[in-house]
Image (cartoon, rainbow, N blue to C red; front, side, top):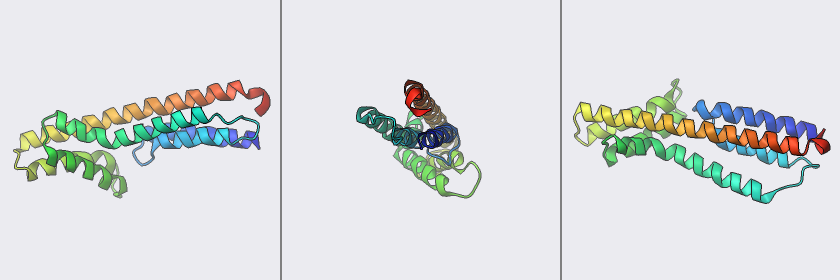
Length: 165
């Protein structure tokens, strides 16, 4: 049973890392579920502090992943309309059937929000570019955290290797 749970946790960890740069999957939450599955193994003692701290980090990173594109829009001169457009575009892009919708959505949303705010095309494109930069930054941040969770997982597997295998 332990080996099955460890392999399932490892699978979730790899999916979490892939999900950090594949916009369809929430990478860090999936990685955290992998940590949780690891601790469900009967021979591994549950560490509630470890799980609690990593859960808070996963929730924070997931929330920041939704907020940072809007912050990028603001940083590059966008208005509240551009920030709202980037956020709405991100949510719509998550559920749209078009390829790369999660990348295109915040860009188009920020652009449309700025056009609605009566900005010229140049400033609207600048704000939309800020949204794209924010998306790239949040994806990189998510990749770093998902990979860190994977390293923590490997460390814990190594620590309990005698009782698992």
